[in-house]
Image 1 (tube, rainbow, N blue to C red):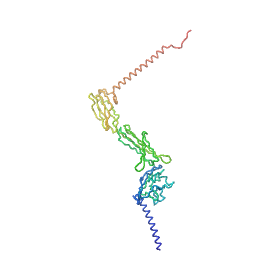
Image 2 (image 1 turned 90 degrees about the vertical axis):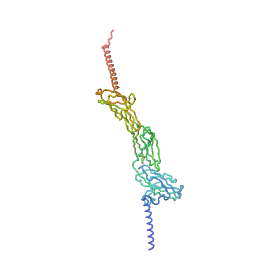
Image 3 (image 1 turned 60 degrees about the horizontal axis):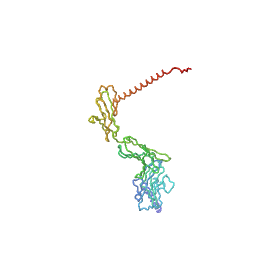
Length: 406
C-alpha cells in the first residue's frame, strides 16, 4: 500500500511538472515579455518586428544575431537555422517547424540566404501567399549551442494589392530654382525589384537604398530647373511588381506641381462704350496671384501714376499713352503700351465697342480699310480691260473658212 502511494505521488509530481512547463510556455507567448527571453541568455536576435509582403511575390526578411563570448558558438562548426510558427504547446516541437536548413525539402518555399556561421540569418520566401501570414520564430543550432528567439517573433503580413509609390520634391518651388523629384517604392525582395516609370523625361537616375531596418527601397530621381510652365503640371509615377506566374501587380501615384513665379503675359486691353467712357483692363498670370495693378500715363515729363486696380475707367476725350504694371511677392511686369486718341463724345455714338492689346489704334484700322479698297479697285479695272481686249480681237478675226484662189 505504501509503495502504491509512493508511485502515485511520483506520477502526480511528474504531471505537475509537465503542466507547469506548458503553463510557463503559454504565459511566455501571452505576456509582453516572456520568461526566459533569449537576451537573458546572451543571444541577441535582430530582425524587423513586423514586415509586409505582396501575395505572389518573394519576400526577404533581414535577419542577424550575436552571441556573447561566454557561450560556445563556434563558427567552424556546422550551423543550422530554423523557422517556426506557433502551433503545438511547445514552441520547439517539430510540428511548428516550417523551415529547416538541414533539409532540402521543407513545408514552406523559403531559404536562408545569409551565412549562418557569420551570424547572418537573412531569409527569402520565394512566393508567399495570404495563408502564410503569421508570426515566425527563429532558432539556431551550433553544436551544443541551441537557442530560439522566443521573445522577438517576426510578424509577416500579406497584402493582395501593390503598394502605391511615393513622390517627393526637395527644394524651393520657385521659378529658376533647381529641385530633385524622387519617386520611390517599397522593395519587399531585392532579388526581384519593382519597376518604376513616370511621365517625365527618361534621363533619370535609378538606385536601390537599404533602410535602417534592413529592408530596401527602389527609387528614380530627376533634377529639373523650374519655370512658370511647370506650374500645374501633373506628375504620374507607376510601379510594377513581378509576381508568381510571370504576372505583375500595378499601382500609381500623382502629384500636381505648384511653382511660384512673378507675373507673366501682362497685357492691357481697351473697351469703348457709347456713353463716352473707356475701360482699360490689366490682366496677368502669376503664382501667387497678382497682389495689385498700377496704371501709368506717359507724358512730356515722363510716366505718371494715374490709377490702381485692374480696371481704369476714363473719359474718351482723354487721349494719351497708357500702360499697367502687375505686381506680386516675387516681382512685377509691365504691359505693352496702349494709345488712345481723344475724340468728342458725340462722334462715338455710332461706333461699336472694340478691344485693343498693345499698341493698336482706331486710325490704323481705317488706313487698312482704305488700302484694301484701292487694291480691290485696281484688280477690278484690270479684269474689265482684259475682257474688252478679248472681245476686240474676236471681231477682227475673219469669219468662215480660208478660200484658196487659182
